[in-house]
Image (cartoon, rainbow, N blue to C red):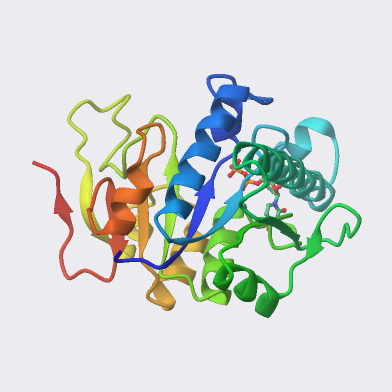
Amino acid sequence: MRYQRVTLKLSGEAVSGDDDFGFNPDSLEHIADEILGLHACGVQVSVVIGGGNIFRGGVASQWGIERAEADNIGMMGTVVNSLLLRGVLTGKSDGKVEVRVMTSIEINTVAEPFIRLRAIHHLEKGYIVIFAAGTGQPYVTTDYTAAQRSLETRADAILFAKNKARGIFTADPRTTPSARMYQRMNYSTILTNNLTVIDQTAIILARDHNLPIHVFDFDEKGTSQRICAGQDTGTLVANVDQDVLED
Ligand code: UDP
């Protein structure tokens, strides 16, 4: 395996399926299968799951509430998704795989607080660790959380799971049919071209610490396993000298 320890970043939309909001049991089952498949290959897996299927802080003004308060609600949404995922992972593995949720905002009766060295210890023991409640701070996203937790837990890479996109493109392929996918690209291309596929704060953090990012189609089964095994499917964002576009 090229990677022994990875962070899988899922968006809330991975949970809601074809709908913008809510929960879809088939989607959750797919998420659980993919995570358990990766775990069965011997890869140490942590998961950061967003909350966009429940609430995003960006809609604060629409509700007439302060942004920081809206972000608190968004972070709580990620806790709901994380507990749901813990439940499904535990059920699907018949309780044979240990799954821990660690939160950045303490809710000790339902999950553990995030303690960095304990998280690493869990991963070393083969537990699946889900990081919930983002960073615990407003004005950032779970993309940033994924980069931060990856560095804290010494992950080899972040796997950014996308729905309905198989990588990073030169432009939006839905509106620009001539758009091409990057196979490999430098962090700086995302920043200078203002590509919004991943939160730019996450890109900067990953760039500064040389953390590889893979962006891939989560709907295609087994892709995360293939990436960990060494196959470059989707887009790899790293400190490459030259960007490479798909033919
Ligand atoms: N959030 C936050 N701090 C964090 C992580 C998340 O305030 O460290 C809030 C923010 O309001 C965000 C929401 O939680 O909009 C849900 O996370 P995100 O938008 O990243 O979810 P995704 O788009 O991945 O579903």
